[in-house]
Length: 346
View 1 (spheres, rainbow, N blue to C red):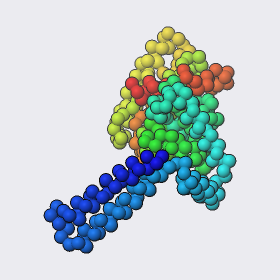
View 2 (tube, one colour; view 1 turned 180 degrees about the horizontal axis):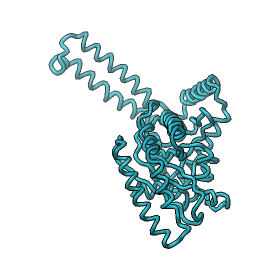
View 3 (spheres, rainbow, N blue to C red; view 1 turned 30 degrees about the vertical axis):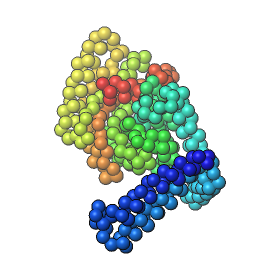
View 4 (cartoon, helix red, strand yellow; view 1 turned 90 degrees about the vertical axis):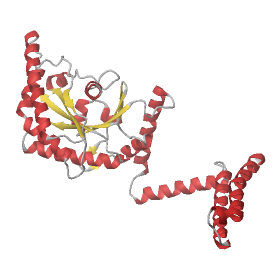
């Protein structure tokens, strides 16, 4: 310990005393410090640097000042939590959930766990998210292969900002890779109201995460017809530009509707129960104007201008949910995992 102290002092002296001697004896010719007062001012600044460096190098995490500093910091944080009205048990619960997420990722990838997988936030009404990704809303996170799904519950105007804050602390450089905004399939004024609520929700997520992640819109569509045993593969299109024109979205929706109509005819020839492509083609053709308005309203929201990069459709079969045949979110299932892997990373 004494040897380390001597080495630190010697290093600081070399870094400070030698420049001080050069300033005093060569300051007039090298730095243009012709008066003794100017040279003395620089030497005083070097003395202050010497004190700061000495305190920095001599600081020990196990020393009494370090322990006292940690206790003072803990007390200040406690007072701030109490003054803001946030209960300690809620904060500790979010920390426990974040610790469980970190432990699960560390078991999967080792000490470099932060950026080994894609992190996606699923933003939407909790009942709708439960239908798309069962089990996600209870824990707040789920592992689906090489993707981590995240969800923060929102009741009326209250969002789990503490949980989003814990996510931000786990990955400070890039908290999440994308946000999938789940929107119900409405028409007319109801779709505009849904877009307004979704834009507000996305703005709250962005402020809590302090990060403007790319947004992908997921249009959840109800279907009463069709065979519930047929895989519900997501269908949609994406674009790389942060801003897209309504004409481009209209053109893409028309092309997608025509392709689905052709594919639907081919599937109906093989199986009369495989009606999903044909039903989705009819849905897109009937709601094309509302879907274009949904993309435009969220991209140009007055709350937060989001960079929308895609529009994807996912079916919700009432017959399948009534029979309880939709699998929970696991490593090999989950509609959101398939949406990201098959659509966004092709």
